[in-house]
Length: 144
Image 1 (cartoon, rainbow, N blue to C red):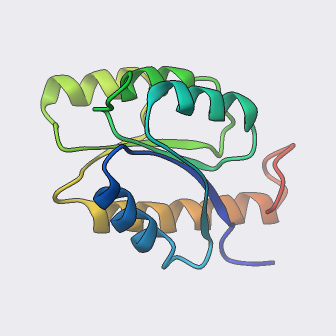
Image 2: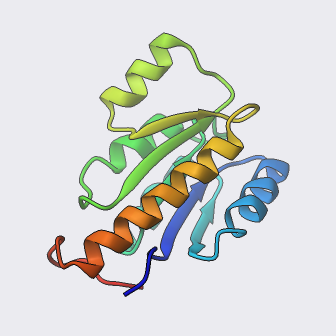
């Protein structure tokens, strides 16, 4: 038994500097790896379709050069109980926040203020996934 599970993640982010900061920050977690890094809605939808049960976390920017993170959120609606979707954006207001939650976002983080909170969220999620898998409480989930 282990305390945490490996979180396989998708990152949907078009800004190179933000991608670099996120990958570096997130990979400091020993139980975290990006399976996919894409920069637009179409690529994200395609990746999600071809990796249906392979991911534990999707991190989605709302503003993309082609398409929208809102479309990616919609594509994540049908997912397993251990798959979480978070929005990371620089454009948070009450209307956007509610719309993201209505589309199925589990959490919303501000790019300029919440990277540390995102990392903490991922640590908690990895521990939860590990516990659920170790105790056989989620049928069909594979330990990676």
